[in-house]
Length: 84
Image 1 (cartoon, one colour):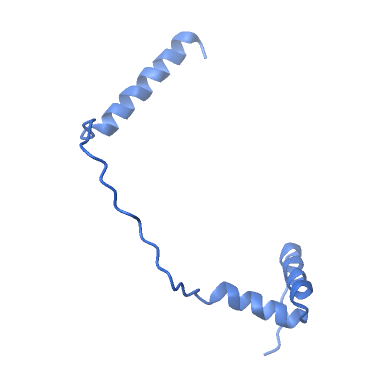
Image 2 (image 1 turned 90 degrees about the vertical axis):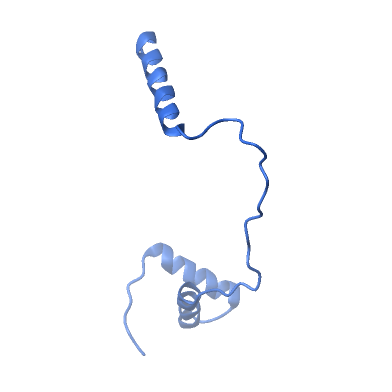
């Protein structure tokens, strides 16, 4: 298929770099770049998060948001007293 495409300067530079690196035509470099950006990459190796035992919780996080808000309020009050 033949079509006209307007490329941004940085995109054109990227395609021209591919041309130089691979020694291919502009058309081939552009098609390869489009394919690389649209075809999902298959990963042979799946990565998983390793489960770790963190031990017994030393802080009750039930009211963590309230604690964070209280700490923020205290810091703001301190800044107001200092005059910042």
